[in-house]
Length: 503
Image 1 (tube, one colour):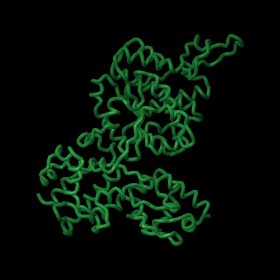
Image 2: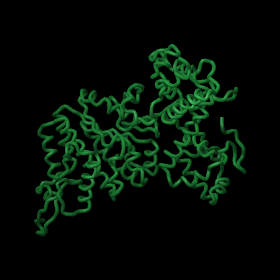
Image 3: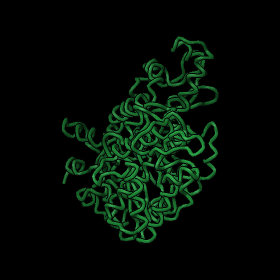
Image 4: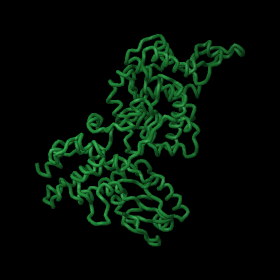
């Protein structure tokens, strides 16, 4: 098989885990992080955007029957793809933190009830839970979509905190005044004696029913939450309030033995909600952070390359043989790819070139951009074959120029689909960087943006936080990942001290 056919046989897969849930098992690496989640040792999983948390989430769901055999029931709190289940929350958001806490608690109870019904858990505490939810018009239909459960929970919580006589409450008479009052079926604080006489229950008592039902049936339930960066993306304040409420509910449920929350959250979002202080952060001890380095990223790339039987045959290697040792993985990587993208004794090795070109100003590398770069490199190499350009040398099936040709597509995707999409208020300032030098300072930025130096410094600080700038010795350096899309020029702007900042 010639080099072109070998390259055609390679597929690096999708850079987004949600888009390849079925194929993910073929090259998913069962790391120590995976083991901790699988064994239930971690509840909160932090990772940078594109850092692999959704891959772990998808793998959990793909093994739902395996978990069932372990007596663990999995319930997803968000749609795995498509529109978020929390769209209605953005339209009519809760106005207080207490409302958000109530929303999460009622929503999770609905998920628990739906899951108990799905798995036909029938015992006395389960019946009590379902009966109480039905009495409050909170028992969801068996096939109700997540967005409907969220809507029902929202309506209940709003009617409680903004009282009106409604279906979830009953009327009784205050014995002291003789005035009719509304008594909710479920409360978010300990009910008064009169409320209890009227049939009210504290919401946590429903969790007692859920715990008892699961214990009697011999099950534990995990409620999985992913895609939280999408759920409340349109408002930073809404996102912060929602997540603060979620983690307060997580703290409350930590005392439970049979109901566990498993929260998958981007590390930058967590940092944004804790930067001003968040007492509940100290209660999060069952967490893990997914971090990537050269060795783990090389393994990720090689694992995907090895899916190609043609590639394995071309080089005469076995799947397990290559993956058994990190040095063998690197050796195989450099059989397939050239040693360097740019030739020269001072030029970086190919993997270093890839990592420096795909990290942002925070210095983080994530699998998503590396997978995208290697995918685009494959496409570029095939174009070179098809147009009769110089063939690879020294046994590789790729040339260095294919990497350079691939970078603009990766840069544009990162700029438009991540930076602009998530930080639209900063877009005008980033767009004005088009064609500018890659190293700037407050004075040069003030000139580019048409603002004062003090204002430029404030804007630049925001761009540092989102990873567009990397601060270097009092200046601002634009990472390689953003340069091609903005056609930026390597070097220092006028008035900025020159520095060897690029390799």
